[in-house]
Image (cartoon, rainbow over all chains, first blue to last red; front, side):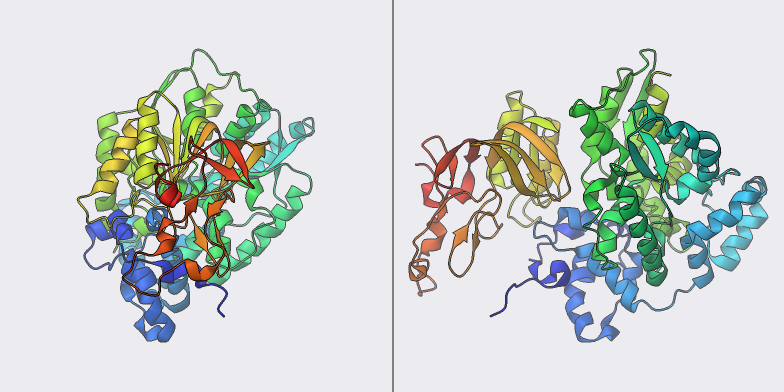
Length: 405
Length: 178
């Protein structure tokens, strides 16, 4: 007799209730997208029969995972779509652009030494026009800035010696954004973790988590990165208590996508790899860590939970942590998608959808008028800053600003 | 994370209990697998969204897309539960409202019917032929199976009543109201 009625990613469990369609941000703005129910479990039956049934409209999926969070039957709706894209998607219409956007590691290390030039040239109108016309990168998009000094360079030079004194350690997965674009985030992380009484180690080798590679159908490169990262986690956990992160999408990719989409083994590190906010909150609640906040610190903040943060289900840790800071007044925004979905919103043909999806969130932010929006996701940050003008901070940076010097 | 009460299951019973507790000033966390918060289709007058909104505005922390996978007991007292997203939720009281077979609050195999979260004792005849009536349209006996409870609705685990875990809703089967 058959042992189980469950197949890979559980698509037979779909009841056709359509709740996933009601939460899909893309379906709400784009009539060409068939919606998660059809794109995922429904069409999977056809694709299994003949890959020719692959639907080109699957390119519109943001991989935001809202369908999975909403599914009462445990169907891995977005994983079905994501794996189908990796397996069957035709060659992209803009292969060079997609490779450029997806290879955050490579582009970051190329751009970083010339950061002042790159940052100066990228916003120029003629450059944007060329990127738009020749590559298909929307000229309306504001690009993230690159940093001249990488986070790891700073860490090895400035912070590494001081870490020796702590005696207990965590490893830090800084992510591409933290390394090439915004090293201040990593500096804030070191400050907060040190204040909690822990030293910081870098991983033996860190590669891009691969979220952008997977979204751009570069599954093989993503799997190579995953193998290196998993090796580094195992090595780190021999001596360190945990591997901490500051980006929700990296965290989600490392914990979930490596297994569900790439088919890799994650059990060895999954429970010990988490966002720094979760780790900190648990330590504080257990009485093992005490953070002292500056009584003079005042800030009016609004919290935006990124889609992947909702999938992780950890928003409450960040919210509770921020509410521990005496001078913080916090508005929790409704859980709406910002629309950028990583590299998606950079692409010319998708840019209008990205902005249409984000509209509700932008209006909520403008109505709340906070000093800053707090979110764990760097691409949400780019999108919100560009579309609302309100600065966006990672919760780690808020903590770093609020703890006693 | 500490709460006064953790409600497991976001159907009608779970939502009602969470709302009632929150309105009485308790810190409540509701863990529900999907957004449905109901076994109804979303087409039914938008009730899942209204319900979600009324829960969050009452202060209930709703953990969506997550499910409780087990707990840690101190004797017969449940101290905390673990979820598939890696949350550890501590509370004074726990409410089990995971429903019956359809929502996997009860699971039937060839030889037994069990409650998968805590292994709560379930009332069912050992002879499998008594589980169902071959007449498809007849009332089916399995519809009345449910977890065994004390007069106060506390579940039994291994024949011993749990101090702080109350079962509510359809998971009670015909034990409901007794």
